[in-house]
Image 1 (cartoon, rainbow, N blue to C red):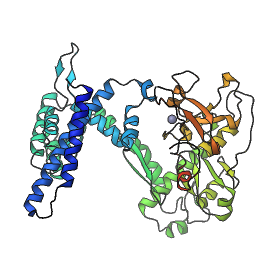
Image 2: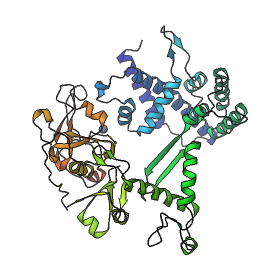
Image 3: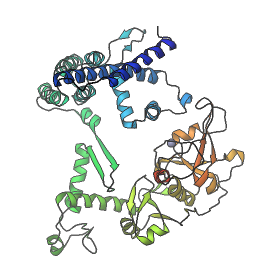
Image 4: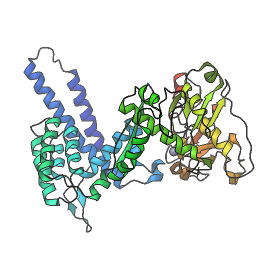
Length: 458
Ligand SMILES: [Zn+2]
């Protein structure tokens, strides 16, 4: 039915109608009419998300990675709409549950969440409601039968029509307690929910950690915390913190840390001990350890944070404390950001070169990619097969997914060395007919702030 022309025509009309609305004069309206207009605008915005979900489903079903040079649909959508990848992922997951499915014989089947899908289409349910109902169903025990789940979904969608999401959340919690009164959960339920997530680093360089741990991990943690988080243990205020053996009475008495602070310092001591033990072996050719880079001036001025190969920042004073323990790599750059020149004739990038790559590239150099250096591979900017040397100036970090897309073929991305050691990625014609080279700015945000001239379009 929809020809390209018709679609464009409808979208133009939508645009025109929205402009017409913002041109309206609301100045003389009584407040109850303002409220009514707000209600209608909200409803129209909600109805639009139905089309958005349908488009997302279409993209997912007909995704050809080579077409956009990316395996991950949500990453391409995040870039196109300039929304966070986590948001794009959530929208795709929601869309999938609201999509009309098809049977093996190709017959259309109701969506996974039929009542929610209908509510969204009618503009009755907003994203807040949809996420409450999705989360309710995700947390139901697997033992609850499909019929009951369906009933609960329909019931909640019905309530959502007259409630705010926070009110709906309360009803959903009640319903969950009613369906699972003894709070019985199977191993499968627990396994499904387990997880530990590190949040983004804040402006103060602190990170939030959240998670749900299973009974076994808790059983492992308890004795470790009992030992290392006891008053007087691992206390950074002591000149030489006690990390093994027993703290003496004096150390315990002058320990003013809260329980939370003591547990934090215990986990830190545990991680440091594990890294220093060397028992983790190697990861991508380097002993498993912290790789951190900084510049001479930052180090002598004790100013500015140093960058870790995990994509985070460490204050210089912390860095110096870390350096007091063995087994860490520190790369120091001079004022011009010059990289030490290390040449190797072996195909495999040497550990030394890997450390410099950690410091220089920080993470995957493919445009927009967020994968940190610890998870990246060394790639020859000029292909090894083409005579490209294994030389630090010819190497760059790339994540495994983007490594697969790189090559000399007409349908592949190829790489050249760019200014200030940024690798230029040249897209194949089907991704960008003008084949304009791009660089990754994600790992080098300060370069944008100081107006670094890259000679490349953004
Ligand atoms: Zn990548």
